[in-house]
Amino acid sequence: MFSFVTGRDRPQGRPLLDELCGQSIIHTRVAARGTWTITARGWVLHSRIQLLDHPDRRGTAGHAAVGLRDPRLLGASITHAALHPRGRLHVTATAAGASAPLGLSTLAPWRLQGPRGAQLACDEKGELSATPPGPPRFATAESLAEHAASRASTIEHRLLQIARRAWLHPGHVVEALAATGALRDEEFEQRGTLLLARMLARGELRAGFVTERRFTAWTLSTAEVVEHIGTTWAAIGGRAPGRDMIAWFELTDIGRDHMAPTGPHTLPPGMSGYDSPGVVGGFR
Image (tube, rainbow, N blue to C red; front, side):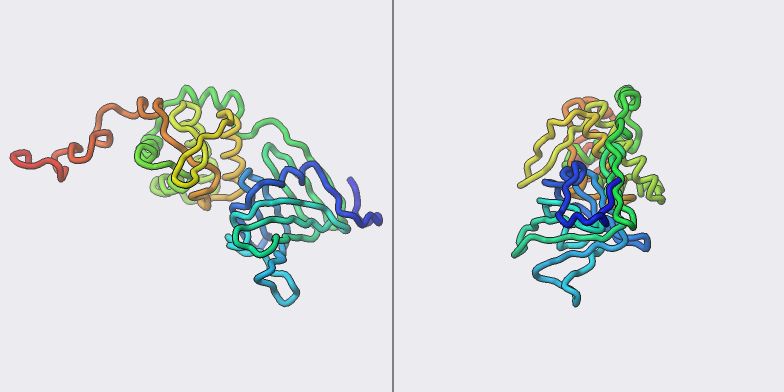
């Protein structure tokens, strides 16, 4: 461990901090236990209070506290992160439409957590401790093999139906889970990741991003995508994930083939049953 009370007065870089550069901020949340800032790759900065030095909106002390789903930060891209004396962490980000870069800062103690258990923590005395990334937590070889051999559940069929007519996003999964009676945050985090992992492992969905109404698939492996989903969903928490969070998903040809070939949910509009608006004449 290294203490920042030893007289060094220059900003210090750390390998784990360097991982933040280039990432966008997708969520912020505030509770009694502090403030969390979450990036698109599932990195989480947690501290008692985080202050934003914004050129357009400043508090009486020249800084404004980060709030829940803070619109000043959402979508901003991190360009630099550095440690200062006494453990103060300063992050610089750029946001569309901002007249100047944004400065996010927090005092010790704080904790930065990343994928696969990576962590950089600073205690009240300014002393650092670092934990490197470990093995996969959500995409082990055994779990992926089990997912690939599974069959689609009822809720997965519903999600595939949504993906048949629109790009799927985590908000759809949250709605589907809520409809089954899910209540606790842990249910959404664990079951949401599991549902997407199973459909990805069976090859029914591909992950990517959507810009200008176009879907672009990622070149990541299934294991990398599943690990990303689990990490980022846990970072955002509960039922909060929605559009433009974590990933978008497109139905594949395998997904279409795996959908039930018969049944009301697979027939074209107007052919889904006796009471369908498309059934006319003597069949009424």
